[in-house]
Image (cartoon, rainbow, N blue to C red):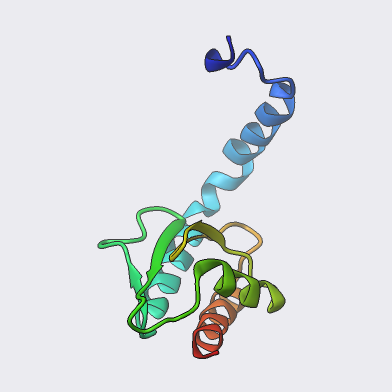
Length: 122
C-alpha cells in the first residue's frame, strides 16, 4: 500500500505546491537553470572542487571535494557554509547537492562561490 502512495497523509498540500509551481513558476525556470550554470562555472574554478561532467542539467548541481586538496569532510564544509547562511545538501562524505530556486538571485550565487572559497581555505 505504501509503495503506491497509500501512506501519504498530506497529498493535498503536496498537490497545491505542484499546482503553484506549474501555474506561476514555469516561466522563470530558465532563470534558475542559468544561475545554476553560472554557479557551476564559478565553483569548478576553485581548486579541490569537481563537478559532474556536463553539470548542471537542471537547477541542481552536484559537486565533490578532492581529498588531495581538501582535508575537511563534507559535513565540516557544510557546517562552515551554514555559518555563512549557505545551505547545501551533503550527499556523501565528500559530495554535495546545490539547488537554485526562486529565492536565489545573482548576488546569492556570487556569495555562495565566495563562501566555498573561504570554507575550503580553512
